[in-house]
Image (cartoon, rainbow, N blue to C red; front, side, top):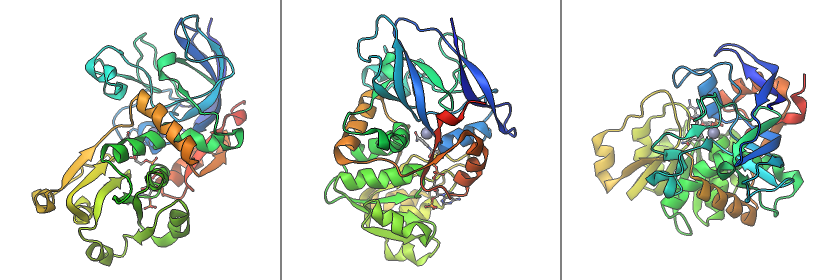
Length: 352
Ligand code: NAP
Ligand code: ZN
């Protein structure tokens, strides 16, 4: 028997979100049913719903930053129990058998991992995401929320399920720690969490935001320096001065100008996913033997490691809690870079 739960759903790229009832499947032996308390709005939800990445599957309930409580578990589930506080990120299934899955990088599953919303699962059903009252997820894809977080922090813990792991992975991959000069480009949902995590890793962190509007906040998140890149003199002043640049911007940026900020052997790590191509001249790479890299979120073991790290270091996202009725407006606000710094839906407001 399926369970009917309240949700927000869009009928097309241009349509507003409507309150609907969504069917959640009956539990399979390795499933976990989660009562969703908070759901973050990631810019990827907006790219998807507005079909900026190509055709989307409608009706669509987005949401891949999910936090809630376990309501029920299937008979084979041993890792989660009723009452546990848990999170779900960008994937809800993968083959768990290929080299990528065996390496704990389920997001690169060779069979094709199943995204949390808007894609066909292995059972043929289209997945629907976190802007809803409940979700049913295979146990492997459920993350434990550490006890060190208390309930008052849960809204801020929610964005760690995507923004947290997406920024933690590259920072760790590039060995960020004391003495590393890290520049975070764009102080939005991902960027502000990236600043907090890089600071917790002990790095010397700079914010590279378009304007000075977020300066006080950027410094309060743990950055030592803050630069407004609308002032082009910044590119001369900071030439060759970063080991790692983390680009979190969701639209095209003049990447060559930013590449010039990298020191010898420095790396530009791109996690932003704009519809436009990123263009770099060969000489931006040759000079100072610079590198350019990218990654998609992170695997499940690393997501658990990230959330444990954040609990240990007191890192949570800075959020605006919003109601279901505000989601359309907040999509526009996210695009204009005006959210401080992640919008999180209070799912208690989903009932029609
Ligand atoms: P967001 O909250 O909108 O933040 C992006 C920030 O980029 C804005 O706050 C703004 O910061 C800056 N920005 C926006 N428009 C800009 C423009 N035209 N030129 C320069 N800077 C601009 O978005 P998000 O949720 O952090 O996501 C960021 C991107 O990462 C999106 O493309 C998203 O799809 C992608 N993403 C990728 C992964 C992955 O696995 N790789 C995971 C999640 C999200 P300032 O105001 O400070 O300039
Ligand atoms: Zn996301």
